[in-house]
Every structure is written in structure tokens, then in C-alpha cells.
Image (cartoon, rainbow over all chains, first blue to last red; front, side, top):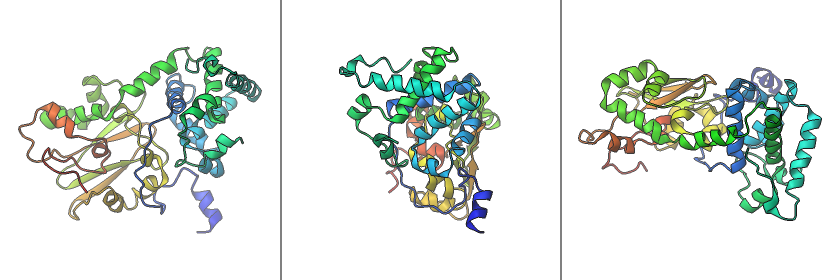
Amino acid sequence: MTATEQHVKRLPNDIGGLPAAPIQQVEHPLEPWEKRCHALADVLDYHKIINTEEKRRGVEALGAEMVNSLSYYERWIVAFANILFQKGILVPGELALKMEEVEARFHDSDPGAAAPRDS
Amino acid sequence: MNNEAAAHDGDHSHSHAPVQQEEHPTYYEIMEIAVRELLVDKKLLGPGEIRRQIEVLDSRTPALGAKVVARAWVDPAFKARLLENGRKSCEEFGISFYDDTQLIVLENTEKIHNVIVCTLCSCYPRVLLGLPPDWYKLKPYRARTVSEPRAVLAEFGTVIPDDVEVRVSDSTAMVRYLVLPRRPPGTEALTEDELAALVTRDAMIGVITVNGPDEKEAP
């Protein structure tokens, strides 16, 4: 099979059966933001805003380069933003403004002044 | 891309610097906060929902799955119902699913050893085991388990005899699997709670077997 045929026949997530390295039995406790991201996924599914399959396809739609360079929950949050744009629930400009606003909280001279990050 | 984001060059390289996490969140953490707050502002999510779901996530540990396994070992009627309809019998056991996933419980026997995987992503019986370990979500386990399960199991120290069939079940968004491990010999006198204490997460994924109370850990 040529390299390009491989791309056609297998989307980035479809790795079952491919050769790969030995198993490294790694695990880590989730960072707080990762756990919030996971909870967000569950709540979005519960409210039928983004279901598990949409999330999986949203990650795949990031493309191989991003899939390979972002960590697991980094992929999720970027996929959620893209899916919410596609559904017209958010627009990119408002997310950019909101991110600037959130970022500014952390530039406050008193770190304790950061607004509650878990709603 | 900022420096913190660039430092995340894959699943193996999470930043574990707590001070930096607290005071200088990464681009992705800021995105998570912003998305969540916008959705709350739009009243698509309730203000306390994420916190409540984190409590649900924290309440799910492999101890739940172990209780189900121990009950199945001591109660043949429960085991029959569990194998017939995993979700219904777990709910009867008092476990809430909070989602639409179905559960198929796979019984290990003298002749069949089951192992579960999610080749496409990370689907997992979270209701019974909590969140999956990183290795379950990484390429080597996802890629190789379906094509060379015996080699993968051997890397976990599990050698399945040639006359035992190895069955690999590939999870989906809607259908999750749990392995019902074999009850170890010499455990006839144990209580249900003592049995549950023998059952580990990895045994319910199917990458190891359950040891009896006097057996040493597999090397």
C-alpha cells in the first residue's frame, strides 16, 4: 500500500492492528483542568450538545499533526471549541475575547484574586 | 503557540509543575475556562454542573467494578443477569450510569480469556472503573491489542496457555465492556467484601488475572 493510500483508508484515529511500540504502563492523576475538561464533556453529552461520537470525530478532524502534538485533553477542548463553532453555539470572536479576559485574571498582581475557575 | 503549549508535545509530556499550572495556566486551560464560562453565560450549562460532575467522576473507582465482580462470584443468579444485561443488573445493584452507554460483561473461563480495548479512542467502562489509565489511551495498546493480544498480555506479565482462546472486544461510544475475571482457587471461605478486595482494575480490563490471597503478585 502506498503512503497516500494509507491516509485514505485509515483516518488518524483508526490505528487498530497497526504495528506499534511496546506498552509503557504509564498513568498520571488528572490535573484539575483536565478533570474539568472531562466533566465538561460529560455535561455536554448529557445536554445533547456534543455527544461522544461527535467528540471523537471532532478530535479526528483536528488532523494528524495536531492529534500527534497535543495532549489528550488539549485535543478535547480544541475539538469542543470547533464543534461549538460549527453548531453556531459559539463564534470564534467571542471565544477569543473571553480567553483574553480569562488570561487577564491571571496577570493580576495577587494570584488569589483570580476569579473562581470552576463554576 | 505559546511556550507552555509548545511544551505539551504529546501524551507523554504533560507539564507537572503545579505552581505554573496555578498561576500561568496554559493556552488550553484558558480555553477550557473560557468555553465553560461562555456556555454558562448562555445558560446552556448550569453554574454548578461541572462541579457536580467532578464529584460523580471522583465517586467512580475500580472498587465499584470489584463489588460487581465479587457479587457475580457468590451469586449465580446475579451473574446470569449480569451476563444477560450488564447495564440493567448494575443499575439493580445501585450503580447509576448517567449516560446512554450499554455494558456487556465478558466472562473469563477455563477456555476463554477476554481483554478489552478501544482502538479508535478511549471508550472504557467508566461507570464501573472510573477514568482509564494513560496506557489504555495511548497508541501501543490501542494498535496492538487487536492484532497481537498474547504479546500485549505478556508485556503485562500475563501468559495465556495456547489452549485458551483469547477474545479481544473493541469498545465503542455506545457499547462498553467489562471483563468478569475468574475467581481464584482457594477463595471458598472468603466473604464477598474480601473477594472484592482481590479484584483489580487491570483484571477487569483483562490484562491480568486475579490472584488468590496467598499468591504473590505476578512478576
